[in-house]
Length: 349
Image (cartoon, rainbow, N blue to C red; front, side, top):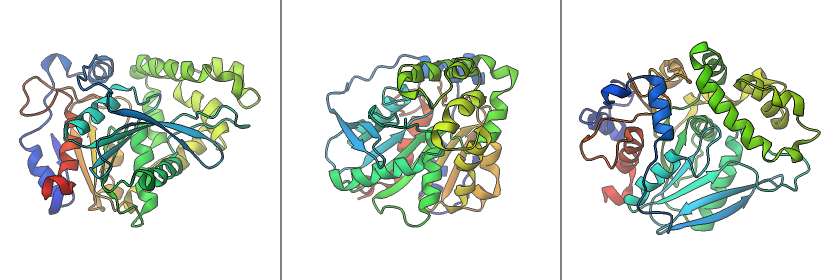
């Protein structure tokens, strides 16, 4: 494992010490990046706690868009983990349930936003994308007073990592005092660089799988897109860049896909983050490059702690059996909870 943690004091330093005993070790049969990516996303997982503590909430955003949230509540005065999903994800994604399950086991709350518009009556369709930091900020600004949340931990996965990091940088020092720490898994931070990697022949199968799922989700509500999206061009979409050119950019108000990639990327905002933030990423991620996390925007910021593993794929990190006291074999999720625990007033009282 390669560890890059600029801070040598405080919780980031303590987390570095913790990692010495909890490095990521994949099974011998699961060392390939694509295998890690697919197995972790497709593996069936059992959450014996169920959803008996879950409740649905709806938040109306400026402009009329609505968002459905799934909340797993114990007591709003207890720590609350808010998780932002990746491209095509939802509150039903396995990593969303995995993180909320681990938060629940800690005795904490969890909130899982579904970044899809529930208001079909809007005149212009609303699309959520990698740059939707303002919308996530608006969700938080409504949740905090409504539930009187006192201690918040923010987590983001893949695209959700970009949204969250962009928001943290836009906040600079003016972030809500209830937010104590943040963590991202396999974060997207440079959309242009990621698009180039996805276009490689080695990612043809993975890209086809992801784009097909995205198109299926969009086509379910396509009647409301008439006049805004070229139906024939959309059906011909085969790559992420084509999807963003035909669908994301025009609906989100960008000139084209490249304009979207430039303006929505979190990379320029990393230097302005002041919330203690953990970034977990694999050097063999077949989708998102690790190089942006080695740049000056990260190295110069003591609030950022980066952990790079040699293996793990994209949102994979499925480890060998019998790895210490971890709740399950999903290493990154366990490390996120470890990190949040270092900041929790409940655990450090």
